[in-house]
Length: 176
Image 1 (cartoon, rainbow, N blue to C red):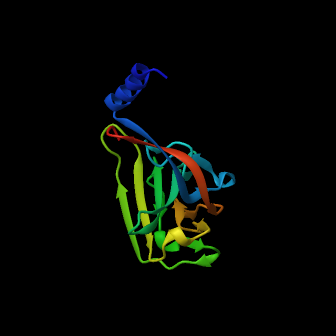
Image 2 (spheres, rainbow, N blue to C red):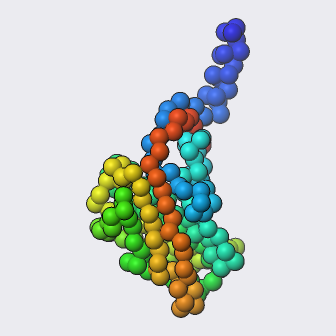
Image 3 (cartoon, rainbow, N blue to C red):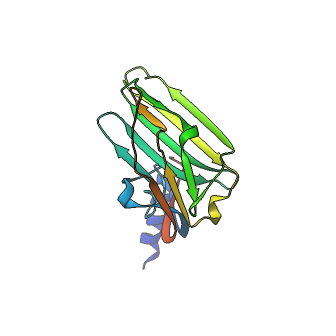
């Protein structure tokens, strides 16, 4: 390949702020039978970018993603709703790692009222665990009666994730 086209390709990638990095990713992959495969971030992994599960009804949008940032292992739960009748009790969530119940070490809940120009109430819940998710082969999130709508429990099927290693491309960008 002539040097000029290679230079132009590299230079355009540099100007765009994007750098493709071939790699592999080992992570807890969502089970597509349990919800809609959803991206958890805008940039990053290309093949395995849909690393969260979501569910949507007329009353709410729910997204769940297990994370392990090297320091903390946690399950991130995001709920968006127009109804002020939705409540969420993270203490009722059961997490099974390789089929064994895990013990919560810390919980954070951030319930935000609608912002100007939006009618949505948002919940950001993180449930932390002392166990390292990197050692797990499977993770199951059981919401049970954690979510209620106008006082009535919203029943949810479990959301499952299984360890997978996938060849991927990581798109690093200064724009993210």
